Image 1 (cartoon, rainbow, N blue to C red):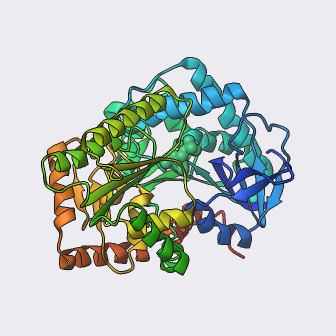
Image 2: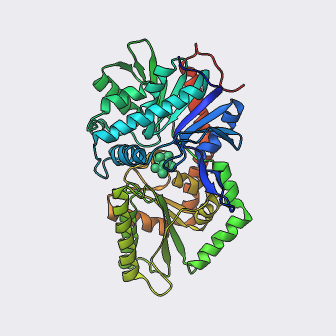
Image 3: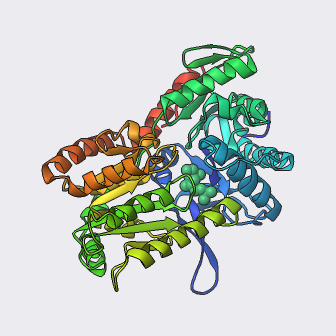
Length: 476
Ligand code: F6P
């Protein structure tokens, strides 16, 4: 067994929960990133001497030592420029990402990318093995690190290991295209508990393990030849609901929401899309649907505007560059054809914003439009609901987002069906306040009851139940 460390709970994720910043005097520092995962895990990490292993987000930095920030022990794993290209942009985001999202874009299969994926996964596993205390709990996150559970179990059989996939797990016909499908399944089987967003994904995984690896399975459990069992189940992720609502209720956010509406020329209705600029999000089709409603005469640019925020993402990956050009062209064409002076049909922002600005946009928007072709969950849909404390506002949501399984009272749409989307956008635009109120109330109940803390607690409780003989409690 490798040398053991002191952390009782170790989070292993592709990214650290902090971003690198530059201070006014030129020195470098760290700032906590706004993600919900950090806030959900913070209490349990503090209570149980936690550590977080991740990449600092820029190439190089292989000399960074573990450090403490905001009371959390952080362990950086550096990636060389070549590894960023092959492991992160290559295998993670040009092979697995499109393959796991219904092949919305064509996945590329390159053997040297997989070699890099193995090497980087090994480095993460070694870092986890070093910081975890004896019998500690290690929770590995997401598609970039699917080989880590197996590698870590080989290094440290004493550990209790959980894995959670934040993105969809593909249907078996698609997964089987992957030349390294067996290695990925074996990698995941190193965990005691494998978590997915939706029950169908967990069932797909169990079926694939039975068919491809040949292990015995019964319901949600895999029986390994060495006597170990692996459980697969769904744990739909959520947001810091109370935190978002508090922000939305603040005077400054309310003021900013009014200023946004005014800056847009006080239209009767504001439509809003907020997404990473990613081809899975269905931005192109939704903007077309909206513009056709104007062209068809259902409303004019004085009545409604579509604010589309597209956060820059994975900008060196070719498919993302192509998408950016396509959206730029489409927005230009729509505004050129339909806009009036000072009244564009689409207000397009290629930028990322802090949580406060997002909350103000959610408060300003009458119709939130979330129409991915495929999405593990989609937290934007839940954030919008959390911010609508007046029980108003409409949500148009793709039936192919994980969130659609919980937010049934949204206007659910098939993002491939432009006419269907037009109907839903129009219905949301014309909905009467009573209908909006009824729908929003029900959706708000869901996101209040099941927030991100519920998600983390539920996963960690199930994980501690997987090896009762193990006996190390996570909380003191
Ligand atoms: O949805 C999957 C995910 O990896 C998220 O965890 C993350 O916030 C997002 O995609 C952005 O990805 P990247 O780390 O590649 O910028």
